[in-house]
Amino acid sequence: MIRLEDLTKKFGSVIAADRINMEVATGEICILLGPSGCGKTTTLKMVNRLIEKTSGKIIVGGRDTDTMDPVEVRRGMGYVIQQIGLFPNMTVEENICVIPRLLKWDDAKAKRRAAELLDLVALDPATFLHRFPRELSGGQQQRVGVARALAADPPIMIMDEPFGAIDPINREIIQDEFLRMQKTLRKTILFVSHDIDEAVKMGDKIAIFRAGKLEQFDTPNNILAHPANSFIADFVGQDRTLKRLRLVRVEQASDRDAPSVRETDELGRAHALMREHRSDSIVVLSAAGTPSGWLHEEDSSGRMGLVSSKARPLPAVIPADADLRTAVSLMFTHGMAWLACVDRDGRFIGQVTQASIMRRLGETYHELDGASAVPIQHGAVA
Amino acid sequence: MTKEMGAAIAIGRLSKVRLPVRGLMIAAGLVVAVLAAQAMDLLDDIAKRWDDIAFLSVQHIELAAVSGGLAILIGVALGVVLSRKAFRGIAEPVMQTLNVGTTIPTLAVLALSMSVLGIGAPPAIFALWLMTLLPIVRNTYVGLLEVPAHLVEAATGMGMTPWQILWRVELPNALYVIFAGIRTAVTVNVGTVPLAFLIGGGGLGELIFTGIDLSEPGMMLAGAIPTAMLAVTTDFVIALVTRLVVPRGVMPET
Image (cartoon, rainbow over all chains, first blue to last red; front, side, top):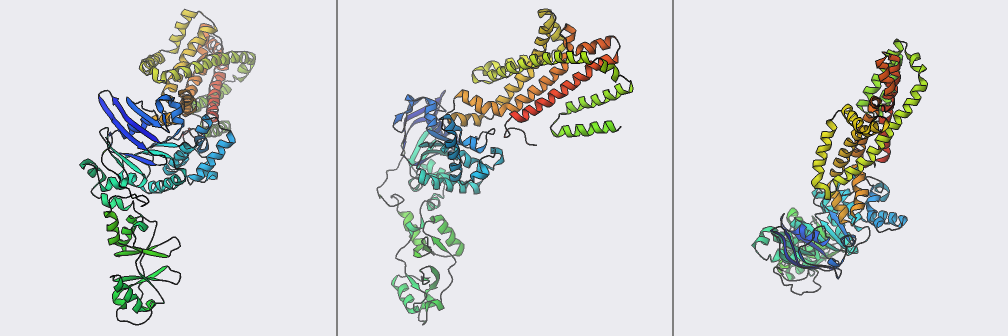
């Protein structure tokens, strides 16, 4: 847990951070977001004491960091920076072992840890342990940078635009890997970014800064749905509703009651189901329960025979754990008003339709997982 | 002719281990000198002086080793100190002073040194030390300043102490530049030691200058050729040490 209380930094007469109050719960990723010069990096670096605060309090894991030595504070936090900062004079293994060695770990244990961490960040230890940083690509270097920060298993990570210098394709990949790791690691993470898309994707909470002030501190969904002021609305962009698509999984917006028929059913049954659901189409399933095609109303009305004789091919299905952005993209690609949604085994579990997506985005207060439907108060925490 | 070609091939091989242009030029000069000596039938003349050459070479090496060794120790230390944050204010003026110092001719330094310390080895060692010191300080200072700031930031953020950052991050990454300074300075030092003879410091200069005075080319070459060989060998040895000591990740890629 990280709590900032009235945290303030003045450089001469310039107030770089003005009475910042926020709290990041254990296991959460909090994105510090804003245009350059807004105070997000200053705030971040005050937490690991690279910049000394002017006033206020920083409580980490229940301890006031003023009572601790800066070196002690930093060793309890993994630090990842945009320039990566791998030491060119050391191999990948030596880089990862820097902190374990500072902490006087046994050599064999440190080396085991290095190999384990490379595995975790999806680099083959046998290939990479003994390479030098300059022999790696930017993406590989930043993976090592993350591994190095994780070496001593600190409960907290401080990340300063960690993926900012990586090309867009690799950035997506490394972000996905990082989120996958975070699912099991449950670190408390402060993460500076200037990219709203990255913030929406990575953050459990987003803190938006402007001119040293914390303008809004909330979940990504709430910030996109209810920007506290016009600055934030502008900052998150006119297309903020589209950005919310990313935050919702297909299964959360799918219509579970959507009808379906078997290939071996009569066309008449398909027709009756469509009328019953006031739908002009229906999904056709194979014997295994996987979507194999679809029928339009006109295919079935007043006709005899088996469904399989008239079924049209399905251009695409969507996995239930995909996000709505992917779903909408597929719909536009194939000119469909709906998609059949499938579980991990490819079995049909419902439909996601343009109407069901709109319904879902219209719900403005909810926890994303629907577990606790408590309204979250929004608005600036100044 | 074949000898010349053989030498050229040998030089070609040496250059694979990154022998510098300067070394090549000295070596080429050496070949020419040997040929000239042959032509003038001076080899016997030189060989006759073997005992002198051996004795004076040892003296020569001592002068270079003591002055160079002290220059490395103090130069690197001074460079490190000047590159520290606390000394940022005075570092530039000090470096400027050192730069001006470098422009004073070695002979003048020797003369000044003698006027203060008298004659013999100590003033010679002092003058050589001073001359060798400057490039080493400068390269150490510049090498450390050129270590990217984000490496130091990363190291600090990871919880390294300033001392640990210096030893594990800054110095290893500046080592190539530091060694480049040492290599230049010490090689020039070895080639300058003959001047020590002028203030009674000994070394191979004794043969060179006496040979010139007596118009005895054999004696002069008996001093000059070993001096050149010592300089080339020194340069080569420091290049090898650089390869061994500087981390592979820091060496410039070839």
